[in-house]
Image 1 (cartoon, protein in one colour):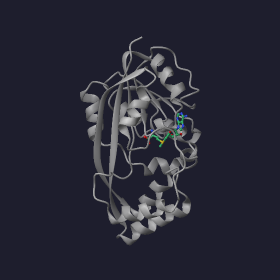
Image 2 (cartoon, helix red, strand yellow; image 1 turned 180 degrees about the vertical axis):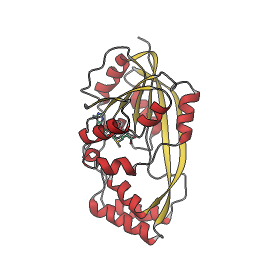
Image 3 (cartoon, helix red, strand yellow; image 1 turned 135 degrees about the horizontal axis):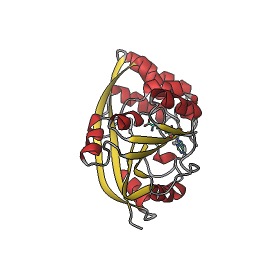
Image 4 (cartoon, protein in one colour; image 1 turned 180 degrees about the horizontal axis):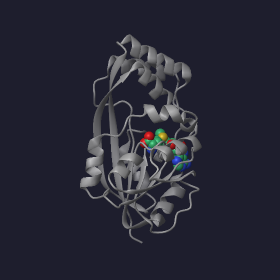
Length: 249
Ligand SMILES: C[S@@+](CC[C@H](N)C(=O)[O-])C[C@H]1O[C@@H](n2cnc3c(N)ncnc32)[C@H](O)[C@@H]1O
């Protein structure tokens, strides 16, 4: 089973290696009015603040819940305006009807939704929203690059991925179904954002080190592959967004 504390053990690398979310995602959240100046946000599984920063810059008041001490410490130092709680989404006590928006950025697959969904339903105001998105590191709609072929060859040798919570990372409709089946939320928006980022070999080494299912030897192999392709690779990523509305009652 992947270890959720993997990120905390690599907090410094996580902080510098994970690419920011695409501008188009932030534009959509703001133009729809889900994120605006004064929005009270609770963000679960915030890491070192990859999503926290842009929300603060949009004028939101952000409370973050992050179980990793080292991750939370970095987030606190970088974004002192955020209210930081070192806790899991499951254990964090939240007062009722306090937040307009809940956010889980590349994190919802770590949560026990039987516990977290009723908790968020209580924590949100009537008409509040829960925005869930993630980065899929490899956009399946783009032709496979030589570097991606090498990455696929590395992961293919594992003989089956370890089990994870919930549907696969590309099963966006499956996630929407899972997030709504308890009746606490209804889906109001699904969208996919396609984006591109170029990495040097050292950045590939850092980024792959942050993946909870990659061994150090596999990371080194990916870095060597990047080197063989000239020390720079262009990666195509996908960010599916699901926006849910709190169900009445
Ligand atoms: C892949 S990282 C995403 C971090 C950040 N939100 C981002 O966008 O890069 C997953 C995060 O979820 C956190 N996490 C794992 N289990 C959790 C739980 N039960 N409750 C809250 N956060 C959790 C991890 O510590 C980690 O920071």
